[in-house]
Structure formats: C-alpha cells, structure tokens
Length: 140
Image 1 (cartoon, rainbow, N blue to C red):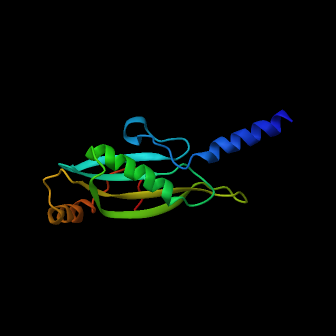
Image 2 (cartoon, helix red, strand yellow):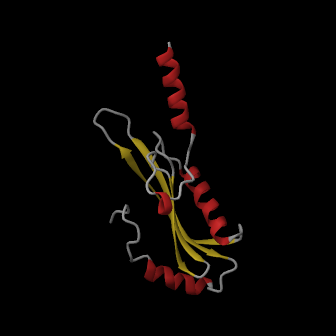
Image 3 (cartoon, rainbow, N blue to C red):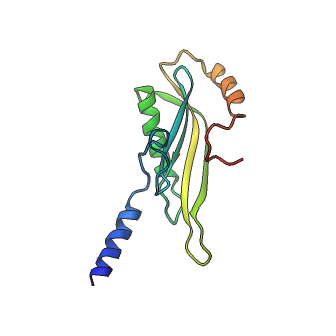
C-alpha cells in the first residue's frame, strides 16, 4: 500500500508543473526539461526561449506563461512587443514501447516599450540575428 501511495504522489508531483521557472543561463539544464534562456540582442531588445517541463502532451500555454513572465522581467514592465515567435515541441525521453514525454517550447524576440530601437530597426536586427546559432541545445 505504501508503494501505491508513493507512486501516486510522485506522479502527481511530476505532472503538476507545466513549466519550470528555471534560468538555464545561470543554473544549467533542468532535469525535467523546463526553464528559460535569454540574451540581450540590443538595448531593450531580447531573444527568449521558454520550455515546459516534460509531459505526455504538448503544452504551449505553459511555455507562453514562462516566456511572458521573463519578457516582463527583462523589460521591467508588461509593456513590450513580441516581434517574432515560434512554437516547437520535441521528445525528452524516447524509449521503444513507452509513452514519450514532450517538451513544448516558445522562442521569440521581445522589444521593450522603453527601448530606443524602433520596430523597423528591430526587424532588421532580427533578420541578421536569426541567422546565428546562439544556444548549444538548439538543433539545425
């Protein structure tokens, strides 16, 4: 009976969190797959990747929650514009015959309202910047 209770609690804990507010830049990868990475592209302009913890289903809403929270922190305000964003998902663990666990990811550029960079300038920066590979865990 103890094993059953332990398993139920363990599964509940593992599946209860849709995302992890874990700074991958500062603390490295999260064992559950979630967290965020960001980098400054220009003054008041950032590139952010937000990932959910692994789950048996796609969960973009959890990734957007992390993305938007980090954007508001970087901009010191909820007044920002997302200029370009993408959704992706991939399996965290794949074993033959087992249910795959999925990490949902949202990435994009954020322009803070306080930035002196105009939207037109930001689009030119994105065009040049998006051709670069910035994070080691991003595939081609």
